[in-house]
Length: 415
Image (cartoon, rainbow, N blue to C red; front, side, top):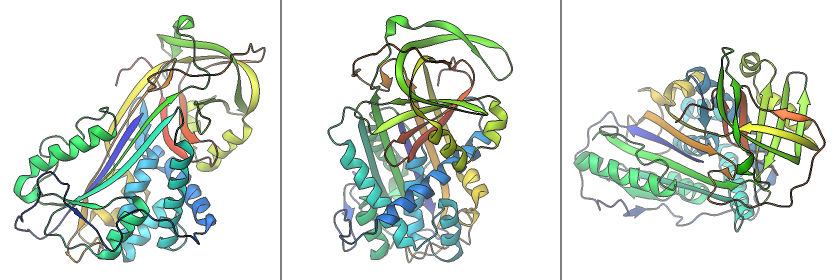
């Protein structure tokens, strides 16, 4: 599973090109040169950040799903990081709108501290695990943009992202290829060309990029010998034959008045996938909220089940300008945007927020290179057959943080 999100900013004023290292490795810093965590950091900030991230994740999924047909996957954790870096440079009403969209209720500094503390903890807990989790941030800026040290300090100290110079005015296509190469390398080549030709015009002043990659073998892998074709009922009532995986296992699962859910842990125990099969899919999705997700996960308990679920892969490419504007931050995309906390350059506004996510689920896991697992035990519990449209989320089991969220309405559709 991989996801990339970028934000590009344009300036209303035209700049003449400067001299810059074309490789983009000429780094610029504020007063900090490495990521930091304050010794007196308040743990409540991390808890508040997780709460805000989950609310934002559901909001964003709903907004993207509303405008996208078929299967959808959204890497909300990645989007949070890019929008948060944007938040660090916003001021006035622009900052207030972004804070509301992120569900950040305290000081901006507390939000950045909370995101940083949680992310560092997550990286520590996944280090050495069979499940590989990588996340990277990088910002490229025109050499003519004057960026404030306070903004650079937040980029470096909270998001591990020093600034690289990029001569968009002098060689925009060369910078596009350079950034695409960085994206490909940080998503294990799963997203090879985020920016198509012409996507980064010479007027680009700043590009903020986050890339996330997940390789997660199931804790209890499916036996490929048991996979076979079976019917999956689409939303319109028609059926399609898809490869269905089977096993009998003790797995966390839950039920409510309008849903059935099952949780499949990944090797190492940090992450899991929760699959939600609504009784009425369209109504459930329409009413989906962070509180409803909590109701689903709170219902889950360990029990023996017979599980049948499809293999699938999905890719979503979208521009998030419209969804983010609808969620409450339209000013960031307008000429009246205030990013004076980022730069002394006037007229900066967001030109595009680009998002691409990819997921592949099979017998071994989620984009896993090899399967690992424990002893398989025979189950004598209920049967859960995922043979109709469903929602899913990949989450941090400890904190409950939503990392990815998606829906499958037809597993037979190739990305």
